[in-house]
Length: 518
Image 1 (cartoon, helix red, strand yellow):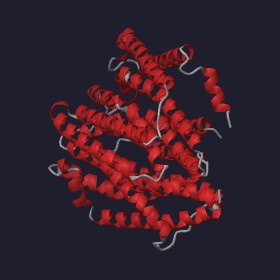
Image 2 (spheres, helix red, strand yellow):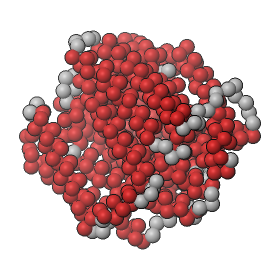
Image 3 (cartoon, helix red, strand yellow):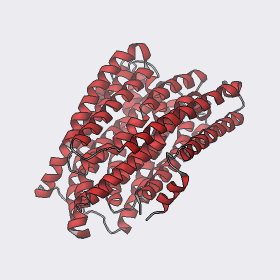
């Protein structure tokens, strides 16, 4: 199957997942609003996700996928399965140790994680309580991510891409009755936390079923250090550090945000909105590109590897630039339509929209990082991106501290975007210096036209919002607001793709031929 078709499969399922995720977030905003309870829940939920990204999505994927893909090419399915068994045994052991330590010492750990909550005992105690409920979610999601890495390396993307939909369905099933019932906010947060754990279990069961059908279930055993496992750790330790640096960015942002009421919830809701295009474009491309590059390079197909990265770069910018422009132009209408009801008020919409604009500025950079990093990871170089992540970390911390006093939530989001662009610049320059990345004059022209077309589309959307006037005012008839927003999205997308077709950036016939190619 072609890179474009694999991307369409993963991206399409990610789109469905994010739509369900928006329904979940809208319900959560309605039942928790922007409040101390929502701050406690978001902090508790973010904590296991920090470790999940560190252990599973960070070190495991970036070090394991190239090794597993290479084993498939050279040793066949049996050798690859045995390698997965030995490495996953270490992952399970690490997760078990971390889970026990965190469950025992949660209050002490959360003092460091959310120091701003300590002065509010009820808020801090609720955060500790919810963290203890949700931290085992780490084990479910880490195992799911590991199984997903194996499936993706086998070219089986469906189950792993569908699994987040299951999580959202479980959460929505719990939130609907909670939106109807009139429970106290802490009780509501408790049941949402329980639903999150159940959703994690359901995701793991789905992916386990898929990997069992593929005949690639790793055997978990007592960890044993052999030459291949040592090689894995040599690759994984820099990836853990790189992932750790990235998570320190989140950690620092959480610490800073905990010092002001409601900032954490504002950042969380804005983050969820820009994660839609990031998930569909960046994560989908990164998921497909890393195993594809690894297979090509393991087999000595350097030309095919460069072609795959070039296609991924074009497709990522072709889709992420207009997505960023649309989020900037439609930030307030999007937030108002999706979230503004129940405990979520008009002032909350304005604050979340401001943070969303700042995040959207960095959206193309977040996507490009997913496209460029596999150029290092597929060549078993996990240390170079670590240094670049360290530089972006320092910039993010410095800017967050400098901007938070005057810009609050906008400062944190803007610092994140700027540091992401610095990371992109470093990745691109060093790949180019090594001869692994280069853009032709035609590709530069395409990128320039994409930026120009994005500006035209964003200006048209901005004008559309102004033309509709009071439709997007607080309290206006919701169905009318939703239809107006949908119409603007359709008009904006139609304008952009039509301009891309007629200017030759991407003729629609050529795109369809690429999607049909096997």
